[in-house]
Length: 301
Image (tube, rainbow, N blue to C red; front, side):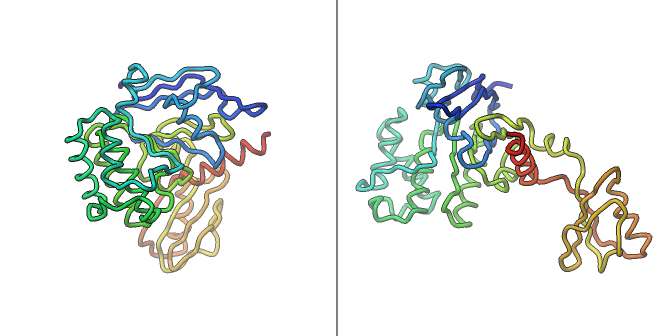
């Protein structure tokens, strides 16, 4: 499969602090890829090096199959974490201008701006100045600006920050539409729920170092089965080899320990003659993996 982004052994040092430490990864064409890590872990610095905003001290980056930087960046859409729109300009003027910067002609740029504003529900505000808009509205405008030229690669740095649930859902639907037309999407975030819902593969970094990298499902399966969820009227007084970690209105969740398997839980319910309505073997969540890996890395310092 062709790569939308290849990063080889990049390092960035500021003074005596190594912000990114010999990180390598690849983003395949057409996938939604999660770039994960705690605040201050180096995610934004990696993105800025990928986009040639800053240069790595060592290592290399190849965008869109190795196109020249100038040609590649014309095919990239970017929503930075720090939003920046011209406050005294009108929404239509900004979007048309952003389209022109990405090599669209004036007519096409204006047409795309109209279409995207309709899609994000801001067409009636197209002549409004940015300074009169709410934070969420201006974020949707910048989101539209990242998509205006139908980019081949789209990079979102904390895209849902500050948005209400309705607009988060809208943005997610539009991101999936971009993938369906063939675009590659990179999420940089520390919100694991969004990644689990949207991404096929992930890279987890902490303090500039790579901790985990690969297909999300494979990373979960590699951790084994830790939890079993059961829906029943009540539960046994004890389950050998498992501990009850959640008990809520007939929903019971057990954490498996030692050499026990998930069958231990269902057997205990059956031995106690408790009818089971639902039984589910649950892989660890990405949030659990995130906490475990980052905690282990910090304790090893």
